[in-house]
Length: 178
Image (tube, rainbow, N blue to C red; front, side):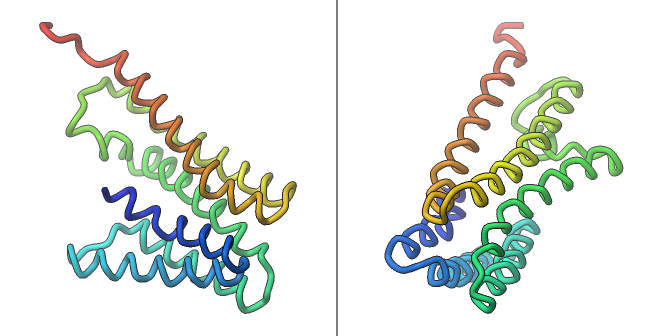
């Protein structure tokens, strides 16, 4: 349910773009993200640090898009976020000796450390590639295509990646009865 809730600003961005333009869609995304974080805070009294980062990025890049009437800024926002995720996964693993994939899933699944390292590296590569792919679509296609890619392409690739990781992990789970 949380993931659907987190997708709401992207869905509203897409809908607003279809009904109006990139500037209205950007304003809707800023407001929706702020409302989402406000709602989360009211319900749980805590907000994930990456949600704060996402809000900061949408306010800065979205604000620049609206203020300067230049859609380039909002098109860069997903790339910056993806690359920031990649850096966080890399730095936390290499310098803080904390594997974020294991930290998020290690309570539910027991896997060898080498496998957790491969999964962490896979996320770093995935986020890096998604950032580059976002820029490719943003600069090689029109804005309407980029907006559609942001919702359907980005989310579709994320879903496929998560499913592929699930299959990969399932091959390494202990067999029942052992």
